[in-house]
Amino acid sequence: MALSCSSLCSHLSLIRLCGVRTNRISNGLYSPYVSCQSRLPLCRHYSSSKVRRGIGRYVASWLQRANNKYEIFLKRRCPRFFQLYHTFVEGFKLLFRDANEVRRIKAKMYSDGVQFKDLPYREMEKLRQFRRDMIKAIPLVVISIPPFANYLVFVLMYFFPRQLLIPHFWTPKQQVEFQGLYHSLRTQHHWPVLKGLESTSHRVKDGQLQGRLKDLCVKVQNGENPKVSEILAVRGLFSGPPLGIKRMSVDQMRHISPLLFLTPRLPGFLIGRRLNSHGLELLQLDRALSRLGPHQLSDSELKQACYLRGLHSNSLGINQCREWLSQWLQVSSSLKDSEVSLLLHSIVFLSANYPKGLSRH
Image 1 (cartoon, one colour):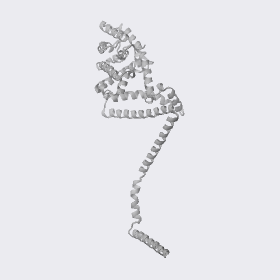
Image 2: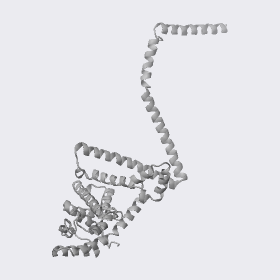
Image 3: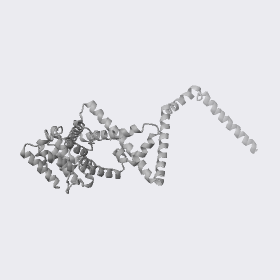
Image 4: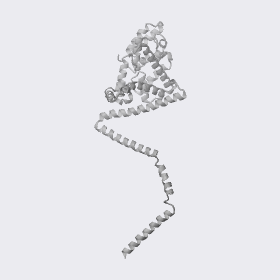
């Protein structure tokens, strides 16, 4: 009896299912047209472009996870190599960001007809620094072009980072160390510049100007910091002979070039042209900075601005840097383009003894 009931129930369930299926078919739910229409939204949702993007995101996330595991492995097993690797990765990120920023600035200059001298201070400084970095980086890129030469280049960069790498790829410790070294090389030319001015003063016909120049040189040689008024009092000697940018002696130009990190090992006419170009660029930077206001600079921007103009700012406090930069801008804001030679000599006048003590010769 139980078996008969079970068979009856199974038969009824089968009839019900068949009825439902029959009704659905008769109502057109399984017609080819409806089936195709129901699949269209699914096809549109999973289009080929979205599939490609999904695969791209998957691959990117997988590579990111693999890179994170690789960095953890390096940090645990090879800490020194990890520091080098991390510095290079972050350096490339900074370089790529700066390249995009420079491209944006160039596009704005082209579209709006803006000249370099009319740019805001930060954009002007970005273009100047990026150009100098690329000049240093291009030879290394050219060397790495031949097959397998990149391995040699990597070894050279590891052992000679100061000579071959731009600051993007220096560690914070290296930045402080290399800036100190470059400044020590720069200060070696303070004394020759002052001696050159002393010898040139004998060719000055105006007795009053001659005396002012001698007093200024003696004051700096004695370890004192000159006043802005004392520097501007001799400005007439630096627009024409004997100390104008195009009239000074070649030896004097060779001593000034390292103050701007320029090589003195070039013919005299090229040195004079480069000094004039870099001096005018520095004067335009000062004018842009005066428009912005030095108080708008961050601490790192302030120290970098002082370092560019001849001061070893890493060993000074922020207030000292602001005071020194204020004196520098007082001098530069009073100068014309033809007096740019005095601006270059002010690197020695203002920074040789600041804040106190003699410059090492």
